[in-house]
Image: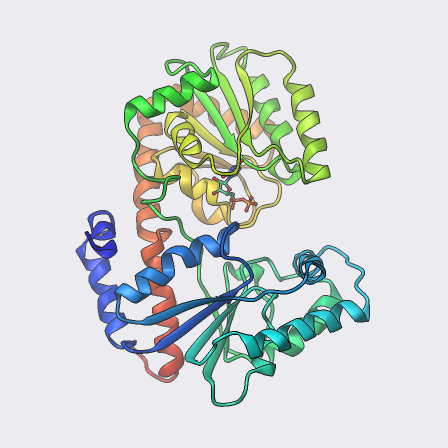
Length: 407
Ligand code: UDP
């Protein structure tokens, strides 16, 4: 079965038809995406599904990857942090290295096309070094929060952005004022991926048994890196506040082992310390490829939490809503776009607030179910990959027809 037919079963004929109609007007266009890795991270994941879908729609899409010495990745990691507002100390030689690697890649990569979409800062200087006439349009797709960047990093990147025909951000709050046209494209999830597809009931129960979780008793779940901004200690506090009312309640905090992140390891230690020897509280250290395990956990939760104090888009919220779970989320970042009080869950500002809302949801199974339905429908409408692709196609047409009133 072709890919689009499989998505059509989920999003309906009309949505796929819309994609086909938009794509017809872009037929034969050559599009190249450039990023800095073929695997790992959200961007590689998006390109993994977007390239084949564009191809199936008759658009010629290719994926090129910029490469450089290990030093280059140290510098671009600093750019990443600097764009997100952390102060960074970079030397002139670091900027020069980035510039030089971009120059070499512009010679090496096959960029000849109608449109090149450059993802994030690593390949941002390619337009400067690509011979004129090879590429008609350049688009910079920024996946991170660039609203309050480190000044030195921004000064360097801004000079590169002046060569672009458009820039794309993931949320209004992540954008910076720029001279070129700016577009907003929200992230999305793939409903057919291992993380989100339907799974057999036996598999779900096997996962719970393996992790020592009782399938009968209520389960609270937060899936997150062990990061202070995800507030795992606040989740434990909310769970403890609930204990007198629901002594049978279980809590699972699922995250990665965080060996390579000293701060993550420290947060994890604090979490383990606070969890103590509570048999109903599981701190789960999952390997990075545990997609089906996370899928099973999300499908088993009574209520899903994402009690972040600061958040990007919050894909864990999207994943949980897609699985028909009400979500209690910290009122920040993209969580506020997805969690709507009494409709898809509740936004909260404290552990006590979270406990209060969990109590409400525990008491009313019918409301949980209704919010779960609404959440699922909401994600289908707004945050699946077909909508994401539609936004890309619409943007490409808009750039070709800047004055059209209807695309
Ligand atoms: N995730 C995972 N394993 C973990 C923790 C998180 O696979 O141990 C996944 C989670 O399911 C989601 C993504 O990583 O798809 C996290 O994205 P989100 O936007 O919620 O947060 P970020 O980590 O990007 O701040």
